[in-house]
Length: 465
Image 1 (cartoon, rainbow, N blue to C red):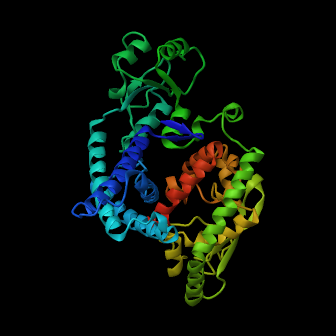
Image 2 (image 1 turned 90 degrees about the vertical axis):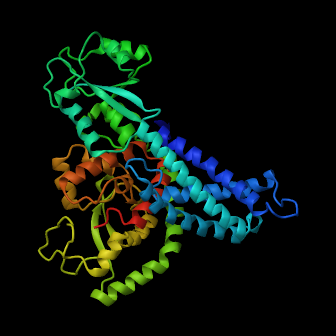
Image 3 (image 1 turned 180 degrees about the vertical axis):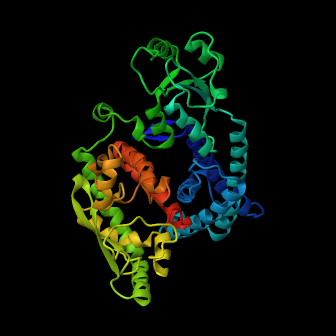
């Protein structure tokens, strides 16, 4: 993993993006060469003059593929799924490139060259992805790690391996037991202890040791062994730092108040707040202009199906625990909560109208929150705001839940692009772990990544309810 502005990017993803950048640039030159191969006239492009067009094409295509989730390596995609996402990526990229050529005629390649380059790019990316899948299945360049501990924390690694079939460039070799710790994992996963910890790591060629010991007092914590490993070039990582790095979340059961106080991140400086506010205003203005026709059509459909009101105002908890009225398109019947008690939205909720089901799936119901952002109550990216009733309930049941209120809530967020729709306390815990990661590591770089991933969520209808 490489750390960029406090956010971790896997080396595998960086290698894949770098390879596909080179493939796309090459295809522009190759396509132009093929287009004029049989003509008597000299080739109209030189290597230097074609470079801006090649860079523009590559940049747009990489963004289009990222928007369709082709660089999210959390889920294993087979070649059919890759093709399913690659086709709309190419269509999106073609539309954007055509618009750029119209606005900037100096970059125009020509219809014949562009069509040929698009076909070559599709073939090149498919071949690259096929080679990448083969490379991943062989475990090439996969680093190996040993988990120190066999208790409750170690069990999380076993459960994570069952739920995550994707290779993330790291392989857990096995677990090392420590004294006075109850076994919570399969005995077959425990490595036989012969000699010191460093000799065990050398025997299995482990590059990392992950600490997953629940109790670190009473003399059971092997500090000298771990120090020896670190001095000999073996990385030593705490389980909380591991999940932050590999899963993009901060585990609630691994948090301590001292870690929150003395740990890195949690930047709430005036400079960061100012940059975020400028980003909010620019992004909201662009989105408002781009989606205004969609909002008008949505308003008409709501009126035709269920009558007024078009909008739904609801009290939510914002930064510092202060409440505000969030604005949304109404997606439920007028009598959705006639009993007066708030309810979690459920799958196939009967209170949702037909129009509401569509706009929820496509997240169109969230668009009026642009005005909350412009008003300063919300940010464009941040933890989703919850109702006071649920906040009081969740604060009583989940430790550190209030930490998410240290920044403004957002229209979209890290939890929204990484986890499904939440409708229970268990879901709220999972989403909180992503929200804590965002609160700790938020930056303009991470905001851009979330916005790109949000396009995939909207286009593929992921997580809507």
